[in-house]
Length: 245
Ligand SMILES: [Cu+2]
View 1: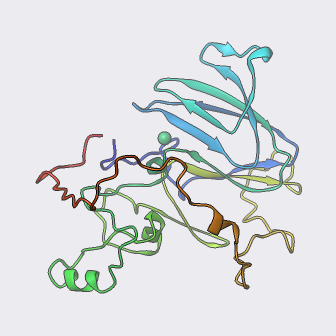
View 2 (view 1 turned 60 degrees about the vertical axis):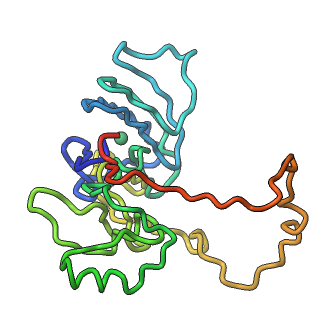
């Protein structure tokens, strides 16, 4: 499952996929069928939808509840409906994180939290195309370029108004616009946020969080604690692969 798959919607992978463009206050209906051999929890930002239909037909109104994710099982179909009442650009994607990525190799140790500055340079003297995993998570991969086979795509890519999007695979954007003409599904470009409505990193002085001194105690003190710390040595089995999960 985690090997070299390209997860797609209608054979398209982000960013090579159209956005879903709607007028504000349009009632939107999405029909999604899962033709793959694994479930896809399909997730929409900014709105709550109702599951109004399944393979069995329309759902009775008494069974409907608001959701932001619909898990669509193998061979299943779901019809989702929502009122597009929030203007903006909203991520719409499968919630399995590796389904919003393209091909990647997994038989490498994770480097999150490891300072590997200088390491890549030394390894590339031996293996010219070597590339380490990002130390802050997968999104580091967005800003790296590495040679790829002709028959695949970069793991994550796409550039938005705030920089690298860091997505691939089963990902698109629902664009809700007041100014969109009826029947016009052409891409209106990125949403222009009202001044003062965009989150930013606070870089000023932070108040001292005094509560952290009082917290962090032990709610259940250990009983029969060994007199001395015990040294434990773990050894991983040699050659343990990670494929086929
Ligand atoms: Cu998925």
